[in-house]
Image (cartoon, rainbow, N blue to C red; front, side):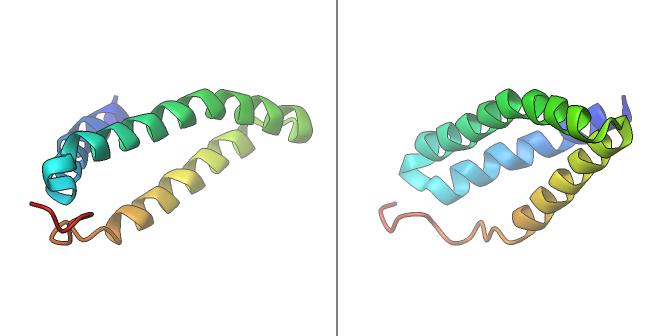
Length: 89
């Protein structure tokens, strides 16, 4: 429940960054973010099953998810919302 609350607090910021960075192409940037999200939602159960079959450990599955979330947080901190993707505004 706490993790879901954290996600729900972060999502408006993620969509706002897409619109701010995308300018007139905010829908396109949002679509790219949504596509990436759907792709990872497809890959993550396959990766979790692969990790479990290779290492026989649920803990490794959870730790790998934690590492991915940590790296994603670091990548988000590198986004400068004042810089647009394109010069057209």
